[in-house]
Length: 328
Image 1 (cartoon, one colour):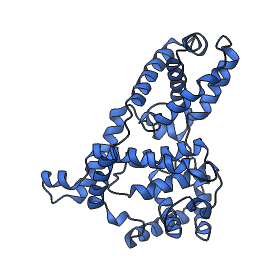
Image 2 (cartoon, rainbow, N blue to C red):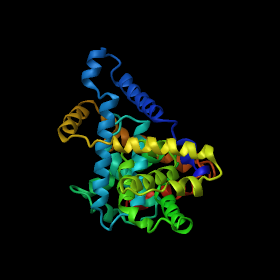
Image 3 (spheres, rainbow, N blue to C red):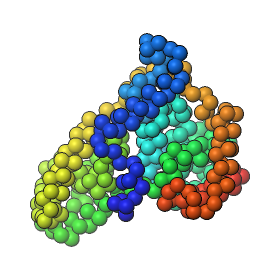
């Protein structure tokens, strides 16, 4: 349940400012470390600022979506949602200058496939990638433990898709005056796709997001679901109703303000990123491989029951399977 999940306890932020402050801290930490002998002017020219990082992250979210859309066999949308959650979580506490986003992106998708039990072999997975597939498999396996560490092994993600289906069934059952709620489906799906390119999934609960999608779709279709919200869902809890109305308004504004990054801007930022990235965190570097081997050895030495989260059984099985996956 979301109410008792690690997602609610550790990966939900108070508001957009709270998320922005976390990203700013990661940006400042990296620049302070790598540019300690530079002037403020030199740092500004050399490094990405937090706004530029956010633009780049969004471009990688779109790349992740496009990769998953073309994936064979077809990938369920909850797997894509989980992968996007992982990518956002990783870069809310880390700078894109510190860890190569293209490598982290594909590792997020691979880990999401495993966690959500969308069973594909490594050969099948890298078969969807262009270029050197053997190298791609090596990159994914080299980054998988790093990704799990940065996620604090809190791998279970609650997406808005399940509560959405519950609400649709409830509307059909308890709100019969609204004929065929399924006609709202296309607008709902469009809204939910856009919401993943905002920080709403780091601020609002899956049920709030799914309800916002229904209200948005009804509004754009000139339909009215106010009676369902006020007289059926929250008829006896006015405080929750007021909180929901405020949340829905903010989520809809966030979705409305989504802007696809311009290709020329992304190219310029990618060029700047190449000049200021941390080469030690490239998965092909000897320093990175040495750190990851030490981390893996440390994980193997833990006694059962001493992993840092409720997802420990899942983590243990993944760690034990990593050596086997390398043989695929």
